[in-house]
Length: 304
Image 1 (cartoon, rainbow, N blue to C red):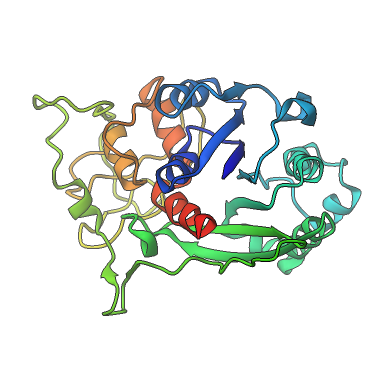
Image 2: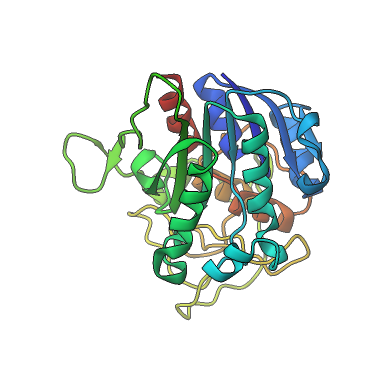
């Protein structure tokens, strides 16, 4: 199956889809470091640029369109006025590309909060917008820990299947891990996931195994909380930008912050995946990514 990826970032979702056996033929993002990371690890089919300035004619025909659009400007009022809030622009670009390319399936990723904006009216409006393009649309709140990611990361996946298709896929894919089901594999803890890594100041051959020298504080706020090594990590967040201000979680030993490599592992990126740019940029790319392991299970669902 041929996949077009919008808002691809460093390529977490695309890597998982590729590992599952899908063919990513075109991708796009606006963040230069993320595009270079993608190009280095996944392929040179990624285009750096503003999707609103890229004609649908320049995007190849495909079976699947995927992407995680920002939701900062969403309210029912804004969405009904459509273009009144410029922050809705990227959502409308995904609608535009799906309308023009008519893929068999699409996957849209977003944060948990999208379900509660305007008391649930925004997700209802999004569902209706995609249904109007000719798709059966479902959405589901995923805990990435249920799919082998050592992190309790909650994300919404909106899944569309073109209404003229004979086969309807089962969504969501069944979990592989659980905190309370003896028939499934137990959740992977952050302590287990990071146990193999040496301290960053010890000799090692790992890529991006560098961390902030920031002195830890424990005040209960985001980025200043004690990490329990016997549970999956809290959510890695993408606050801040490439110039600073990113939130970096403590290592489960609670003696320093995680390195870029360790944060990538908590997101289920493999060790050979190299992040381009500064430490801060690496942290940001990782925090904004979809965990590849979740992408893998979504890809297997599509292949089935």
